[in-house]
Length: 375
Image (tube, rainbow, N blue to C red; front, top):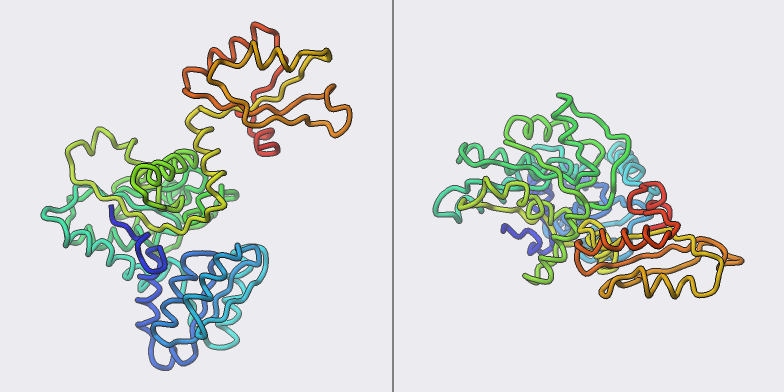
C-alpha cells in the first residue's frame, strides 16, 4: 500500500497543489491564488499557501460540512480566506473563476493541469524507487483523473511492463464512459457517495493521458467500497475515505491475474467523517446481502406482529428497523421492516417462510425507487 492518507493533510492532493503554487512566478505569487473545492484539494491548497507564504482564496459550497471548512482554515491560517458560495461545487467554481478575472489571481485546478498532474506523479516515483523490482500491477483511483494521469506518466516511462489499473466508483464512472465514446463527456447523473471520486466530467488533459497509458479501468460498487473501508479499519486500523478504498476493493476483480505478483494499491486519502460510519456500515451490509428491507402489510388482527416475530424470523435474524408508515391509524397500514441476517444463507429460508405464511410484502432492496425514498 502507498498510503497517501498519512500525508499532513491526509490526502495526495497536497502534492499537485504544492507543485503548481511553488512554480508560479514572483508576479503571480504576489497576486495570489484561488481554488474551488469541497474537500481534499482545498486542504492541500490551504497548506501550500501557508507553507509558501502566498495569499489564497478558497471557494467552497455553502453545503460543505463545517468540519472540512475548519480544516481548511486551520491549514491555511492567515494566508487563506474561505468563501462559502452556492449549493454545489459548480457554483463555487464559477465564483473562483470570477475572482481570477477580477483580481488577476491564478486558478489552482483540482486535476486538469500539467503541474498538478506532475506533482501527483511523485507518488509513482517514490513507489518505484522503493521496490527491488518494478511493480507488476498498480491500482489507482480515478476521479477527475489527475492522480491516475500523474502516476501513469511516470510509471510507463520507467516501467512499461507494469500494468496500470484505474478504478472508478460504479455510480460515477466518467473516465470509463469517456474512453468508451472516444471523447470527454459529462454524465447526467452520478452517485455522490464516493465523494473524492464522484466527478461528472473528467479533464481533457487527464483523459488524453489515461486513454493512452492505462491498461484497464474497473468499476467498484459503492457497497463494495464500504465493505473494504470496514475491513481496513477492523483488520488493519487504517482509516480510509471511500475514494481511498477503491484500489483495494478492486483487487477481487483481478484475483487470478495478480496471484504471486508484486501489486501496489494507492490509498489516495483518509479524510473520512466519523458521522458517515453508520451509513458506510449500512451500505456494506446491503451490498453483502446481510441487510434487507421489506414493506409488510400485517393482517388487521391481534397477534399478527407476534406471529411474524415467532414464525417468520430465523433464530439469528434480527429486526434493526421497524416503523409504521401511516401517521394515524398505524396498525392498519404497512410497516417498514429492516432485517439483518447472520449469513447470506439465511435469506432464501426467510423468503420461503414469508411466502408459506402468506405474508403480504414488498422487498424494498429490489425496488430502487422505494429504496431511495425510504432508506
